[in-house]
Image (cartoon, rainbow, N blue to C red; front, side):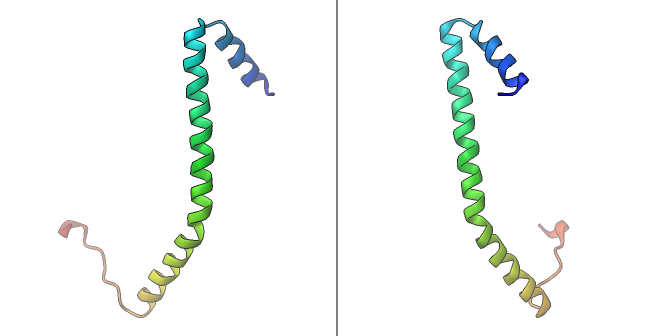
Length: 72
């Protein structure tokens, strides 16, 4: 455990029980969310690569138009 994490837990341990539970729940939710995001990103990487290849091929074949932001 890092010093910073240990310090954080020591500070959290000083909180009333209700606030400790709130803090713990928030940290667990954040960890689960980060893990889920990482897994989804890894799974989508192949899809993104394929889409990028398709777009590049369309560009090289002259099938794209310049983006005119003022017309959006």
